[in-house]
Length: 121
Image (tube, rainbow, N blue to C red):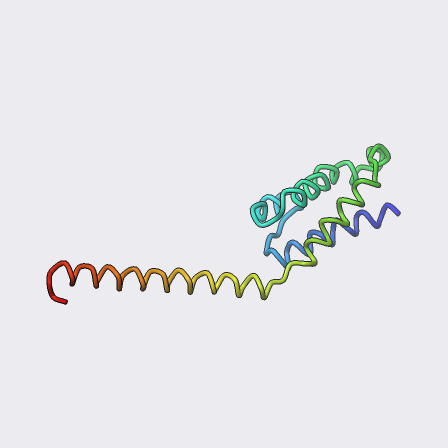
């Protein structure tokens, strides 16, 4: 039973590394991806990160209530498994192309306005 919480935390670290490209210990990885995670998921992950030193100590582990930590781990894992990397990549490139198209459109409009103002059109 105790090993399953440790396995859940290790799986969360692996998912953070694979899906969000954030390595290191759990707290550092969560801090790196803070803006990309919903607030609730981030808080649940930080709750796990805060309990991690207590879980590593054999006598202090007995003071930790594992039921809420398992719920938090389940919630964080479920969210990280839902992340679609291909969709995120596609959204990034569509955003870049949209900003380029907007910039080109603004330059063309500015060029037409300047040519009209100078009387060349």
